[in-house]
Amino acid sequence: MIIVMERNAPESQIRQVEQKLQDKGFQVHLSQGVERTIIGAIGERTQAIMEAFETMGGVEKVVPIVQPFKMASREFKSESTVVKVGDGWVGDGSMQVIAGPCAVEGREKFLEVAQMVKDAGATMLRGGAFKPRTSPYSFQGLEEEGLEILAEAKRITGLPVVSEIMDPRMIQMMCDYVDVLQVGARNMQNFFLLRELGKCDKPILLKRGPSATIEEWIMAAEYIISSGNPRVIMCERGIRTFEKYTRNTLDLSAVPVIKQLTHLPVIVDPSHGTGKWKLVEPMALAAVGAGCDGLIVEVHQNPSEALSDGPQSLTPDNFKLMVEKVTRLSAAMN
Ligand code: PEP
Ligand code: MN
Image 1 (cartoon, rainbow, N blue to C red):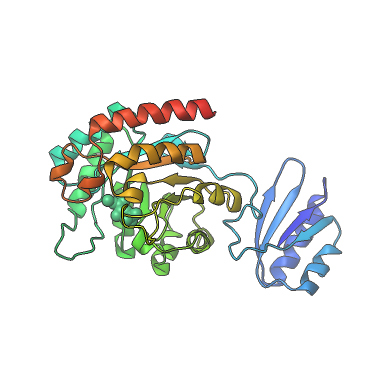
Image 2 (image 1 turned 120 degrees about the horizontal axis):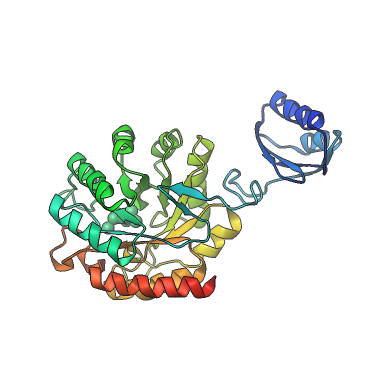
């Protein structure tokens, strides 16, 4: 529930409410605005409890949070969360463009494509070092060597790097190399991993599971936030439907829904969302139109030779054309 204090309620009354909440076993989150204080309380809410707080001095009203997610909800925190990554911000109205190959395939190739996407306007680099492949016989990633290459690309280009974490045992090591830890679609409901990520201080890019409802996806964010890490960036990457023409069905309505239901930034992955490079640019533009805070796009120098996800990868030239249009569209929208 949320306890809205009266305008100019004195500090002593705020402390009393806070103390009583703690005595009753609630987790308390204070949000001190310019005009009034709002107290978010997580715990077992009953009618009697709400009434007990409603009658306390300085309390204007007690509002129940009806959604199953609490800390991620807009009701709990009305101002949008802005996540700092490197020198930039996700969710501040700017358009982040994260780009790079599906997987880090080798040092030379990665450093080259990193420079190419930077020159084309990318604001962050992506590249998988641990790859969640459907087949155990497919390329699984360069692992720590891949992370070293990512860190080198970061030093050279100055761009922050994003890479997928699959196992809680890798958190410590990955934090030494990357700026943003990506939770892949297949791990969206790996609750143990989510809880462990809640204990680290890196931003988390949380992809939507291939068959997750929006509510389940937000509940996954709730795991991370309630475990102590509020720096969550949501990522729509398409869901599985009966449609077979595209690899997934990119659910762009999720963008405004996430904005309405939560205070979290949301980005879109038109590469995995479609599985076809020719659809990446149109869906990237549609995502910008839907109000996303950024895009994550796969780019490869030679998509036909890529070790993973070649068919959905843009060439650096096509990526550059996409960025130009994205930049023009987001400027027009602002
Ligand atoms: C990826 O980003 O390369 C990836 C595997 O994405 P997803 O988890 O969305 O399938
Ligand atoms: Mn991929």
